[in-house]
Length: 456
Image (cartoon, rainbow, N blue to C red; front, side, top):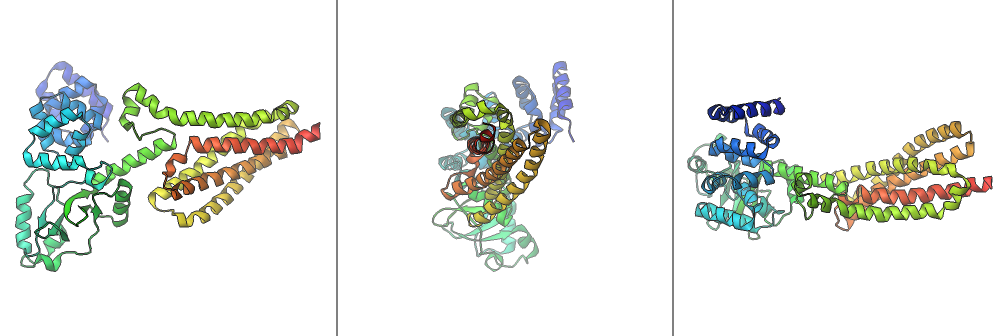
């Protein structure tokens, strides 16, 4: 495995020695995926110096691996003509992504410099919603007609494959109006007679995407059918492009990252993920504040619960010691349940029709785990405070609290899913606050009922 830190140190030594040819040779010796990792460890001026030394083909390959912010930064710092040539070497969808992250006037400048056909196709992609198949697809596909022979198709592929930006996964069969009629795999073409007709060997039972299909549906379709690429059509079944597995891999990674952020109460709806980590400080603050404010309001409810039972704490101060214990374990087991449910709903392993089964199952799991921890807490409390009644009440409160937390953690994602709200937003702040309020209410009610009266 490549040691990125050692490579960065070596590159910096070469840059200090100003041996440009050696630096260029060193950079071109690495795979672009490794170069992307290396570039992210370099300083901005170092990145620019190294980027300028790459040949344009390798620079284009590298751009696809870099974060959006770094793509815009590097292309904006080099000569416009060179940057235009690099963008022209990108697949259409990648070029649209890069240009879409730029300021509008800067994007227009590059579009005007690109070849007319390529520019028009990229403009069409930019017009689609970026969260749909239209915004994700590559319009450069190889098409043939039903009357061609296998030999004709193979010759056609050889000619078309020479073009830049052409990704060769499947060959699509269309009519004169570009309606999608069938699909040919390369395996089928290579194993069929050169005289065989396309219409006799093509697959007509086609799995396809619509230009308005959203990202989550696209990911689900690729996961379900396991194809390397899927065609994208419009309302009239006209072939518009294709989406490949590597695009969906990136999409899946983005959605997973977004789910993780949402589960922690970090908003990514109006703020780019890169901005949260390394961009403008105010954007990072804006992304993290809303759910914290909601949590603050929720925790004030928990404070009100504690204040309502102030007489209980005054009569038996030791009960306050156990509040963090109950809140911590209740919050953790609730978060475990909600993580399992959100992930299951996201992957399709769980459905709304199975909600009751999983709620009941998690309730039993919560009761079993809660009982185990309740017995331990009761024993420790009894041995520590030499008070069996206190131990029993705290232990029983632990059982009830952890059971309730698992039920809430399981029920909430299914409830949100039922009303078409992303279940991921239920994690973290929302569930933790709810469990704190309910858990404290249960605990203080039990203490007031079974302990305070016996000590009064």
